[in-house]
Image (cartoon, rainbow, N blue to C red; front, side, top):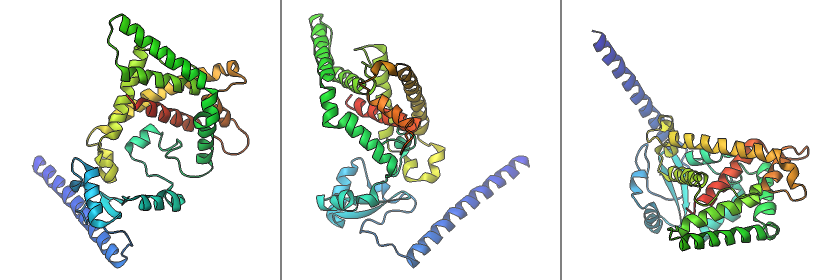
Length: 312
């Protein structure tokens, strides 16, 4: 009798959930008919999943075929997400230049949430004073011509060290993976600019651990995650992607926290020639204008670390 009652209760819950979904879909369809939106042409798609089943294994090729049928600007229903695809230079220019302020804020997927501390770096933070400050600091102290000139000697020295290390390995008959060596060199070049020191030793345990973390992080971020397109099932983590990315995020957070603490202690040693992290920390304590939080600093450092490691 108890088993029968449990089965009846489960059946009633399932029926109620199904009825709720059908009702929501019906009312949504009714509202769209009464108040049709002005959207570009595109495939209709299926209920709930939209056009996701049509994407196939090569979404870029599928989108190219759709563009020939529906035009340079088309509307796609990706799960419950509304998307517009621009497939010509003129259509892209309308989004990226003519109407850039209307489309400057980017929606966050799972990878962006974990990698940028819920959108706190320069790429995903909302357009405004903080974004302008992050962009200004990045351009002036890391990406601009002056920054490139200031750190040219450090980069040249790191490149020479990498080439010499590869030659020594060759002379000893040891195998050399050029791509790995370039990755370590890029990481150390970035380390010179960001924290004024070499970050990793060639073929050391720390460098291998960092490489593996970045590879796993970027690989997980590149997976198709059903929760990004159907948020109602995101909490279930059906593919286990969110769990893996959270564990990796905790490792990166511990690494960044340790790095920032050590850097703050040795700030007096770089008086007169601050590195990028010094500049970020100085803007945390700035009493005038926009301030950066510790989360902004970590998000920006993690984004640069992952960009550097993507060449692996």
